[in-house]
Length: 236
Ligand code: 5RP
Image (tube, rainbow, N blue to C red; front, side, top):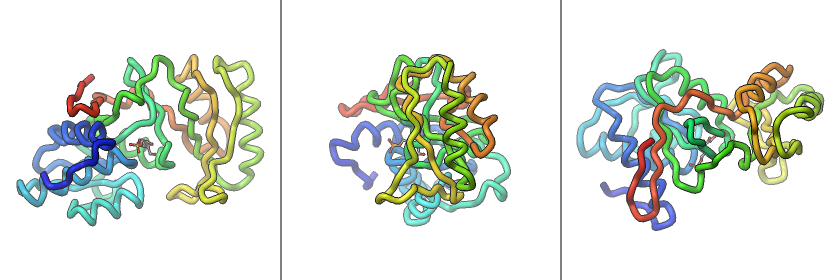
């Protein structure tokens, strides 16, 4: 393979390299977003060029779509593909039950739709992402711009009485402006430090008017691959 990582990216690369072993000729593959998923897209590009692999990729963000095209990975929309054989994506956190926090890159909505429309979801990570309880990474919540301050207040109110260790909610910024998702929405980051009951919280958040989706991915990952800087991988 010609796409080689610098030492800092080694854990991400080996995780991605192991994940593409799940890809078979003819598959429709969901392409995740983020720096780890980017290695997976590069690996797929090389397998297409060097081994003649034929796949259709369904990107979870415009960033990933652009990279896929650069790497020669054919892309289709989820509408065209309808259902996927496999999705490979990164995560911000994972626990022992393979539950995840995602959305650090702001693509959680498309990522959750694409993963849910897949027969299998493989998550590519490194040891820094493993936690005993989810929540140290701020939980991203995608909200529509209309009345977002009201939605934020409703989220803050709903957190009272929840089994969490922090309750701060912040609007995500990019270059000092509100970050916009591919769908034109905003991201609120929930600084909870520990989420005692992720299932209850996820249901609660998604009931609030203005909330589009939250970054808790529960019962979605089938496999988590954890790559290490020494080049070894652990498959859970
Ligand atoms: C994007 C995501 C990413 O998968 C997550 O943020 C991990 O990214 P990285 O591989 O760069 O650490 O959920 O919305």
